[in-house]
Length: 133
Image 1: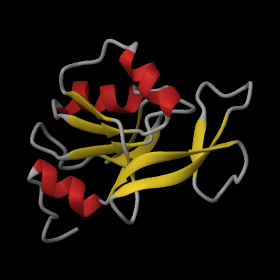
Image 2: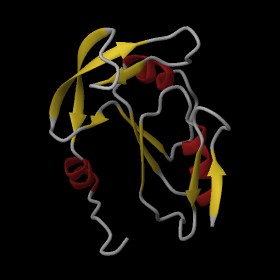
Image 3: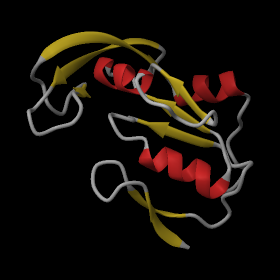
Image 4: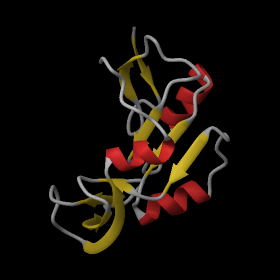
């Protein structure tokens, strides 16, 4: 069953929700300044959400929010290696959050930000990939 979860614009996604329940493993990368999708996943399915964002403005925004205890925030991003990666930080006046981009928008201040591979993240949480998709 396909439905939209989260806000109408910036933080929402159309997705297939069939089979989701309280035991579903949910990773959310790139929170920015909108956790509406994450909060809706928690309310609708009762699952925990592991949320990730290494952008300094996002980390600051998350710290100022009152989010459900099932929302677990991690201040690092996803990459093809573990360590730090160079990100261009850019902020436009009409955007609610600064954007961190490795290659897409090579403009703005460059900062080394923490990153991990999906394999490392899954291992840290004791998660395994499903045998079928």
